[in-house]
Image 1: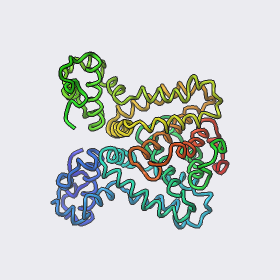
Image 2 (image 1 turned 90 degrees about the vertical axis):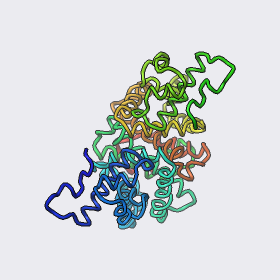
Image 3 (image 1 turned 120 degrees about the vertical axis):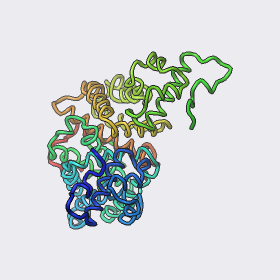
Image 4 (image 1 turned 45 degrees about the vertical axis):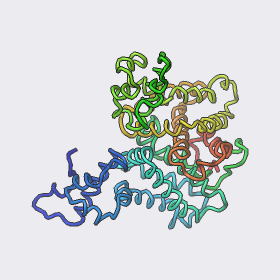
Length: 214
Length: 214
């Protein structure tokens, strides 16, 4: 793909408005972050790819961190997670959270952009400490806070960690490594397999003798 | 770190033998693969980092694929997996496989080199199709063959995929992202939490109505 894909340059004859510019920056940022990882991607090159001045990138997104979050759609993932775990599902029975979360996950996984987002996240996390720290903050802060409202007990943080480990592993196996048959399995098959795992991590016995669970 | 770390150049006054050379190549390869991923790492630079001629790298490892497997210690991971799932554990009851695998995993995780290996694998898988294909082959071929001997039913491949998703997610959460508290949790706590998941994926009901499991 050439530079500036999705940018205002594509629409000649129409003056680019603020929302075109924002989208162009996001598209360029996504491209640079997923290809190069957080560290190597430069704000200057991202601006260049969008055909704008670097100052404009800072005007819209304030910092490389925020641009990264927006470009990688982390807020979207959070919103989807919130849909499964927070209000209005906040009133749903605790014992349905696993199934809800699994259902949301498999729905999310049909987004054709998600494989690139996950691959970009993998590169970022594996390449630099800041990437790992951002994911830590995201899960330890935002997610835990949201889910923690519903879980009780001192082990809530460990439970959220366990959920994150299975969710991330599933995203990678299905979308990035594309292991078969899990990559082409119908969403409901994946949800049925993984839902009980998430439910046990959220509310089941995670400390007892191992043969309690089947 | 400078180039040639671990290479024969460190041991002046002693003539480097074949095993020094091999180790130097592996150390340089590990460094290049984990930093740059499979594609970007060049055989020429790996040879240079080890202070040897590129022809010697091919002499020892035949191909970039084989060098990658050796440098990333994939055979070690396989051996450990075999220890948990294959003979002599091959005679162990099926219903103990989850606990055995979890126990082996947490033992493996104390290897101080493993975080770099996992991070390197993440980068490779996320960066190029060959990396993903190698992991697919590794899991779909070697692992499935080994574990498949013990599992019955058409869904054995899906079961192995599910196990791989949780194992990989756990390695990433604990070693690379270093989510807390799972990163510092005692091995037996992690094994008790994850063992039943692996057991259910291997031999439990993965298709039934989701609320069967707790």
